[in-house]
Amino acid sequence: MTGSRVLALGHYQPAKVLTNDDLAAMVDTDDEWIRTRVGIRTRRIAEPDETVDAMAAHAAAKALANSGLAASDIDLVLVATCTAVDRSPNTAARVAARLGLAAPAAMDVNVVCAGFTHALATADHALRAGAATNAIVVGVEKFTDVVDWTDRSTCVLVGDGAGAAVVTTAAEPAIGPVVWGSVPEMGHAVRIEGTPSRFAQEGQAVYRWATTQLPPITRTVCERAGVAPADLAAVVLHQANLRIIEPVARKLGAVNAVIATDVTESGNTSAASIPLALSKMVERGEIPPGAPVLLFGFGGNLSYAGQVIRCP
Image (cartoon, rainbow, N blue to C red; front, side, top):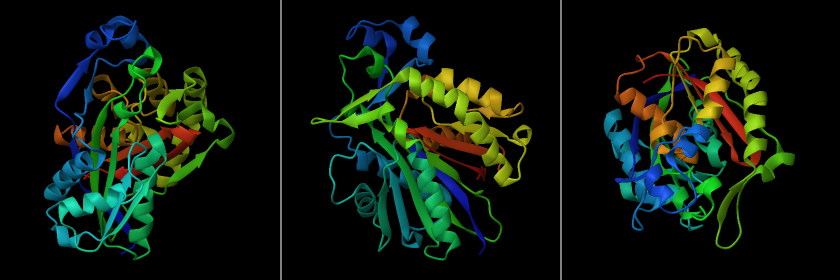
C-alpha cells in the first residue's frame, strides 16, 4: 500500500440548542449583533454528563458502522481535542474502551482548532509507514466547559460536538500531502489558560492573520495535492467565523466548490468543526464520492494544517 483514504465519516451533537435570543437573556448582546459579526445563529450545548470521550465515542461508532469494518480491525485511535478534563487515561484510550477495541495505539492530539487536520495527517503517515492498517480519527470538543459566559465577545462563539473519520490503507493515495506550520510568536492570540481554564482570544489579530496569511497557504495545499482550486468539489475550513470562512474561500479561487458553513448552526466547535461539517455534507449528499475536498484547520497556537482528500 502506498497511501491511505477516508473510508467513512460520522458525527455527534448534543440535543440542547442555544439560540442567539437565549444568549441575549444572559449577556448584553442580540441576534443581529452576533449574526453580523460571526454569522452564528445557533450552537449545541452538552449536558454535564455528556463528556468529551462520550461525544467522541458516539461519532466514532457512527463512522465505524458506516465503514463496514469491525472493531477488531482498528489498530490506531487518534483524538484531537483541547477540552478534555483528565490527563490520564487519555480521551483516545477511553474512546477505544467504549468501542470495545482490542489493542490499538491510542493518542490525543492537542492543536486546538487545527487538531483534526493534524491528527488526520498523523494517521495518514502511520498508515503509509505500515505502523497501522485502519485508524479512527476524531475531533471533539466540549468548549462550553471553558468559556466565560459573562464575556459576550467569546461566549457567543462556541459550541460542543464531535466528528470522526475511519481511515484505511489504499493502493492509491486519497489523502494528499499535509501543509502545516504555526506562528509561535502569536500563539497568545488564542488562549485556554488559568485555573479554572478559560477561553480568550485577540479577535482582530486572529481575523487579520486568517484572512491575509491563510489564502496562499491553502493554495499551496492544493498545489501539493496536484488539484487546482477551481477543481475542488468542496472546501471545509475550520468553522471559526463566517467572516473568515467566506473571504478565505473566495481568495483561494474555489469557484465551483461547495463551501462548508456549518458554523451558522453549530458555532465554533474547535477541533470538531471540520469533521462535523464534512460528515454532515456527505450525509446530505452534497459531495460526490471520490471528489476532491480541501480540509484546512487553523486557530489556537496560530497553528494550521490542511490537505486535499477524496470524498468517501
